Amino acid sequence: GFNCGIVGLPNVGKSTIFNALTSAGAESANYPFCTIDPNVGIVQVPDPRMDQLSAIVKPQKIQPTTIEFVDIAGLVKGASSGEGLGNQFLGHIRSVDAIVHVVRCFDDDNVVHVSGRVSPADDIEVINTELALADLDTVDKKILRADKMARSGDKKAKDEVAFYQRVKGLLEQVKKLHGVAENEDERLWLRDLHLLTDKPVLYVANVAEDDLGGEHPFVAQVREIAGAEGAGAVVICGKLEAEISELEGEEKQAFLHDMGLAEAGLDRLIRSGYELLGLITYFTAGVKEVRAWTIVNGTKAPQAAGVIHSDFEKGFIRAEVIAYADYISCNGEAGAKEKGLMRLEGKEYVVKDGDVMHFRFNV
Ligand code: GDP
Image 1 (spheres, rainbow, N blue to C red):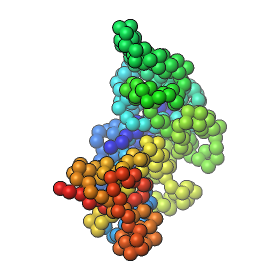
Image 2 (cartoon, protein in one colour):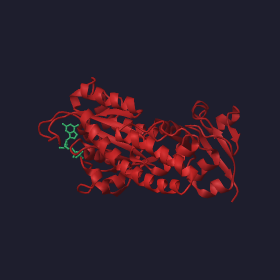
Image 3 (cartoon, rainbow, N blue to C red):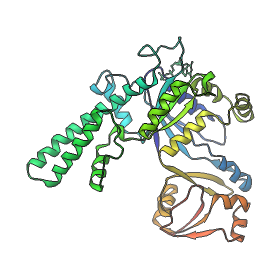
Image 4 (cartoon, rainbow, N blue to C red):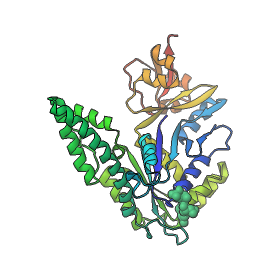
């Protein structure tokens, strides 16, 4: 599966958001849920299309797709130099696919701020500096190794060193690495570095309940930084989300309605994380189960089938595909078939978001 690591300074609301994320829907029987360990939670990706499909198919079971969140507490100034458990935390960040960076945008005299005052731009810089410092360490080690090879006459290693030096220059200025790799070799070298600052980032501006409606200057700061970095940004109130996550069904809808909210902020956060990772969903729809499956955008039919079972990929013959909109407008598979809207697709078919798929395979 794919996972997002939640980072941020202490007392910004990470645990509050993580707990709300992982408790929402926990008791709903249709939606199996589990917590792997206290800091890792599997969260369902909300998708209203599941309800539409289920209304037509009336399946015994509805199985949404999921994404994993990891609460990575303990990132503080000095973490990269091994202060406290710093290195351990950085190791956790290294293992996630994307970073959800929670930024405190709420004032509350009862909640101590680590540097004494609320300042989103400064907080973001503290965290991003630690990540860049850790990456500098990684790059320096690589430079040493490649340099040795370059000296022994390896022409490619010389190019490699030059590239790493460019990366280093950006890291020293805590600048984003976006666009630093200019050719296939460099893209490969960059990927092999597994840098923390090269991961996709979603900023979460954690605001006071009263500031949910308008655009607080704190939020503007976060949006500006996110924009400049090509990162995503969502605004939520962690405290309110904690309350919403306790509710279900109609009660939840009524509460959201009273608050003037179209949906829970967490739902937006989960979907943003999903998009940040470049993920899309296809469906399988049968009376036993309507189920959502996650693939990376651009995945071809056999590999998409492989998400269900490796045998589906190995023995792939073809896929029967109905676009989501066609499936709904034709009131299901039979109707779509009648109208000639069920397509047979082969190995080169690139699966689209919302495709309702049925795979034919050899066993
Ligand atoms: P963490 O250290 O980043 O995990 O932060 P916590 O989630 O433990 O939150 C630190 C404190 O801030 C707790 O007392 C929370 O109740 C409080 N807190 C979290 N989110 C909000 C919020 O949106 N508004 C207010 N006023 N307090 C919050």
